[in-house]
Structures are given as C-alpha cells and as structure tokens.
Image 1: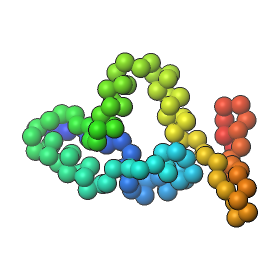
Image 2 (image 1 turned 90 degrees about the vertical axis):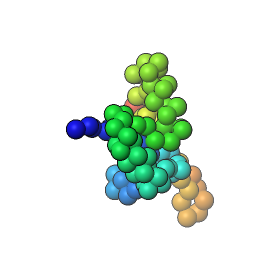
Image 3 (image 1 turned 135 degrees about the vertical axis):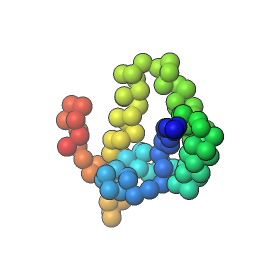
Image 4 (image 1 turned 45 degrees about the vertical axis):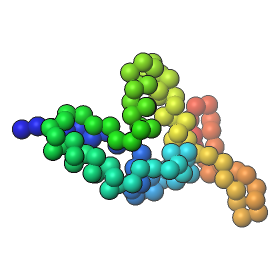
Length: 105
C-alpha cells in the first residue's frame, strides 16, 4: 500500500467563495485548474510517489518554506487572506472590513 500526499496550493474551486475569501488577494488571484491538479495527483499516486506539489509557483513556495522562518511565512499567508480595498457603486474605495490592531473586524 502506498499513500500519496497532494499539496496543490490555490485551486479554482468553490472553496474561496464558501470561505468568504473572494475579497482577498488569494481569492482574486489566478488559481490552478482542478482537473490539472487532479491529474498531477493521480499520476504521482500511480507512480507510488509519497509527496507531490503541483504547479511551478507552488513548488517554488514549498522550496522557500524549507529555508524561511515560520513567522515570516505566517505573515505572508496573513497578507494573502486579508481583505483588499474595493470600489463601491460610486467608485469610492473602501474596505468591507476594518482593522483594529492586527485583527480585521
């Protein structure tokens, strides 16, 4: 028996909408196609590979994670998940959330 761990990174699914993250950098960014991610995972499983990271951008992030301190990585992830400014119907920039200290409300 083998176990393959697929580490896909951001994938174009309903996750970001369901998690109410569409107003974040990661929610608005280009993501990998789910069929491509699944194909990469399936091929790795059939070869008996233990770990597979899909997409060159995600592979780069995985490699960087081995040498960058966890606190810096956590800060990068936080920035990707915080709300970004948006325009209302009058073109005024605003935030859906407001920040108090390090916490968004």
